[in-house]
Image (tube, rainbow, N blue to C red; front, side, top):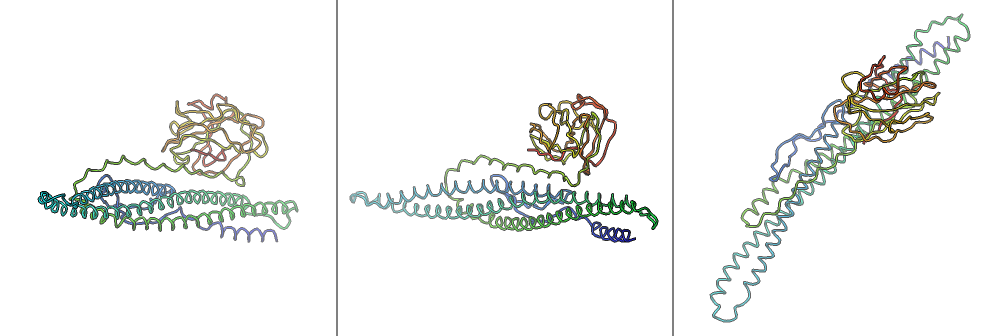
Length: 453
C-alpha cells in the first residue's frame, strides 16, 4: 500500500499547486490622464486619453501606445523646427536693425546735414524699439524650442518603453499558454490513472506498472512547475516594463504642460513684428512601425510524436492575429519527428476561403519553389517566402507527408485547427478547393515556429 499512499499524497500536492488560478493577461493601468494633443500647423491643444487598451492582448494595447507616442514625437519635432525657423528670422532681422543703428549714429560731414542728423535720431529710436521687440520675440521662441525639445525627448523615451512593454506582454502571454498546456497534460495523465483499483493480491507487475506511471506523472508535474516558473518570471518582467512605461508617460505629460503658455508668449512677443513667414516645413515622415515580434518556438518537452500520415495532405489553420500582420515575408520551422525522417512533398500558404480547409485562388504560394523538404533529420527552416500577410485574415499552411516513414509532431495549441486527408495527391497541396476527411481542433502539426517580417 506504500505506492498507493505515495500516489495519493503526490496527487493532492500537485493538484493544490497546479490548480492555482492562472495569472490574468496583462491589464496595464492608465499611464496618464488627459494629455495635450498637438496637431497641425497651429498646434491646437485638445484633450486626449493615452491609456493601455484593456483588450485580450495587452501586446496590442502597448503597440497602440507606441504609435501614439511616435505621433506625438513627430508633432513636437515639427513644432521645434518651425520655432527654430522663426528664431533664425528674428536673429537676421535684429542684425539688420543693428546695422541700421550703426549707420544712423555716424556723424554728418558738415552743418548742412543737421536736418538729416535729427531725422536719423528719430529713426534710431524706432530702430532701437524694433530691435528690442525682435530680441523679446527671439527669447520667447528660444523658450518654446527648449520646451518642445524636452517634450520630444520625453515622448521618444516613452515610445521605447511602450515597445519594451509590448514585447514583454507577448512573452508573458506565451509563457502562460505553455503553463496551461503543461498543466492540462499533467491532469490528463493523472485522470487516466484514477481511480486505482489494485488490491493486496495484485501481481507484482501491476505494482511495477503503477510505479512507472507515478514516475511519468512526476515528470509531467516537474514540466508544469518549470513552465509556471517561466510564467512567473515573465510576469515580473511585464510588471517592471509597465512601471517603467508609466513613469516615462508621466514625464512626457509633464514635459507637455508648459508648451501652451510658451506658445502664447511667443505669439504675443512676435505679433507686431513684420517679417517674412518662414517656409512651411513639409510633413514629417511617419516613424517606422517596429518589426513584428515573433512567437517563440513550441516546446520540445510538450511535443508528441505519433504515427501515421500516409501520403496525407494536411492544412493547419492560423486564425487572424496568430500571424503578426502586416508582414511581407514568412518562413517556417519544420520539426524533426523523433522516430522518422519525414519527407514533405510541397509546403504552401494561402488565405482561408470560408470556414474550412479551402484556400482562396490567387493567394496560394509555395515555399522552397514547391520542392520537397526532407528527409527532416533535424528542425529545418524553409526558405523565406515573399508573401503579404494582412491584418484580420485567416491563413492555411498546407503540406503533404510522404508515406514511409510518415509520423508527425503534435502540440496542444489553442485556437489552431488541422484539416487532414490520407492517401491524397501532392497536387492538392496547392489546390484551392479540397475535400478533407477529418478535422482536429486546438492542435499544431509539424510546424514548430513561424517567422514573419
